[in-house]
Amino acid sequence: MPTHVALTRLQEAAVLWSTGPGTAAQVIEAACDCLVAGVDSPTLRILAGASCAKGSESDELRRWLEDALAELSLTYYPQGSRAGEEAAVRLMARRAVAGEITPRELTVWAYLHITWDGTPLAADLVAFDNAYEYAEAVGVVGDTTADIDADVIAEARRLAGGH
View 1 (cartoon, rainbow, N blue to C red):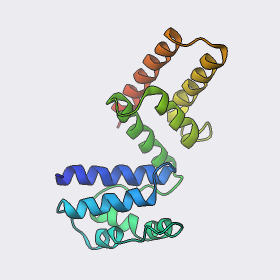
View 2 (cartoon, one colour; view 1 turned 90 degrees about the vertical axis):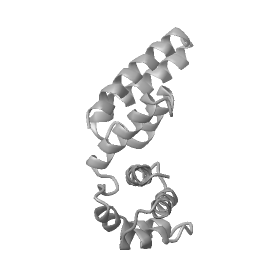
View 3 (cartoon, one colour; view 1 turned 90 degrees about the horizontal axis):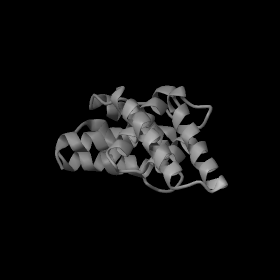
């Protein structure tokens, strides 16, 4: 794996961990991938060797992640931070635009992990999740769902372009 790909995977795993859907194990695995790809730093080695034992992995991650990312010139987002939420929204929007996730999966993710109380950047995605729910509840799918999909992808493109 090229170093830039490994670094991107680590940054993305860290962003998703900071907002809740990602796991500590995914971040630790991405740190290991960086080492295998030839990326190295003292704290990255510690992070890659962190325990994946259920219950302790997040403590280990909190202890080492910020320094490891700083050593690699990557951005650290504290858990629950608004900046982390915004980075996660943009990341998930890019995944939807790339076809890695469906428009519906994007809105469900926004509804579950960002919610109405999170960053206003995700408000339209959360509202689209409600639109899907309404369409399903009243039994108007097909063209209606396709229209919502198109609107979600348009919003995802807007979000993905606004780095």
